[in-house]
Image 1 (cartoon, one colour):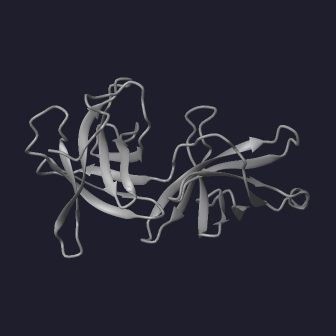
Image 2: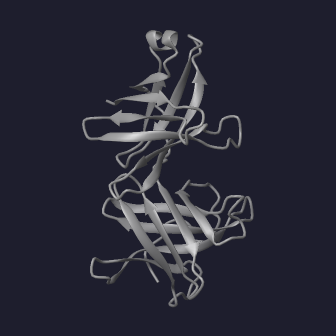
Image 3: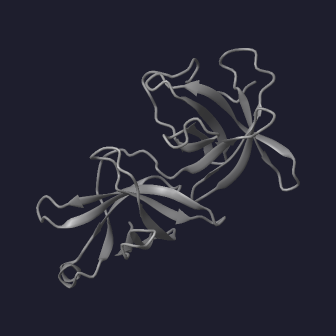
Length: 242
C-alpha cells in the first residue's frame, strides 16, 4: 500500500506540486513539473525525484482529472521507482477543498490494467571523435554512466553496432550491453536501440531525439515499447554478441 501528500506550489515555482510518497520500503520526495501536452490525453506533469546518487530522474507522469461522480479535481499518477509500476491518485479532503489549501492526499488506485514503466531517465551524446557516444541511464535504484564504443567486429546485419561499456572502480572497461543504430518505420527518424545487462536482468531502452534535439548530437533515453512491426532486422532476441 502507498500513502503520501502533495502541496500545490506558487504559480511562479519551478514545480507545480511538491510532496512525498511512502510505502513500507521507501520514503521518496517528489515533484510534479509541468510538461508540454502533445495531445488531449498526454500527461500534464512529469513526476521527478532525486536518487541515491543525487541525480534527478523522471519516475512517472501525472494527469489533472475531474471525478465523474463528484466533479472534484484530482491528480492521477503513474509511478515506478524500480520495484514495478503502480498507480495512485492525489485527492483533496472536503476540509481542504473548503479551505482552498492546495493540500492533496495520495491514495492507491485499484486497477487491473497493465502499465508501462515510466521510471527511466537518461541521455546519450555523440562524441566529437572515434564515432562514440557518452551517456547515462538512471532510475531510483541504479545510476550508470557509460560509453558506446564502435563494434569493429561486426560482420552481420544483426550484430550490434556498438558495445556499451562502464568503468570499474579502478577504471577497467566492463562491457554491459550492446547498441544498434535504427530507423523508425513510422517516422523515418534515426534512433539508437540499447540492450543493457543489469543485476536485475536485461534492460531495453531507446535513445531518440525530440523536435528540439533533432539534427543535434543529444538523444533522450526512453523506455522500450514493444512493436508489432520491427524497425530493424533482428529486433527480437537481441543477444550480447559481436
